Image (tube, rainbow, N blue to C red; front, side, top):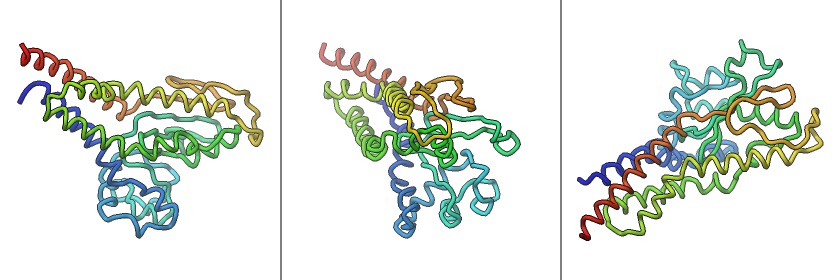
Length: 261
């Protein structure tokens, strides 16, 4: 096996395990649960969701009955107790709010939400309540079509990796730069939608806030809330995918030049 194939296989494995498999096999779980159509959720989705949610953040508002003995959420129980259901793919970015009305003993991590390619997880309902308080739209208004097509795009990207590994078509090298740019692509959309939310404030808020740019990276302040915005595991995985893909492109270019010589 050639070097570029090894690098590409590593990147593909990360993409499949952390993003493609959970996003595809649990697609529409949240929607079906909210619509009262849990019977439409395939059995494999329950198993995959439960597996990937092990060790993830669990809201203090989650009923204890919806958790296993290790305090991991169980999808069937989460639906049964009408608990908040997050997406199973790797979380890429983390935002948390702290405020006096959310004491540390009850909310040790503040009000955290996690951004994924295909949705959200964490205390989304609580965050939406805070957003309403300051006149901001609910999180679900952000990138609805992107979140909807994300699983299909990820599958397509995985297919491109397979072609890149198996064939020497030069044009594949250019398409692979999309994978290299994944961290920047995510940050670009994330920053844009933060700007959109901050500049589309409404009059319904108890606090009247002028249009502003929410903090993309680091700590900030909004009204009485302290905000924290940082990358989490999914972003570091995207950087790994980017790095291995870049190595694969460089290595394959060298291989093709030697082959043509």
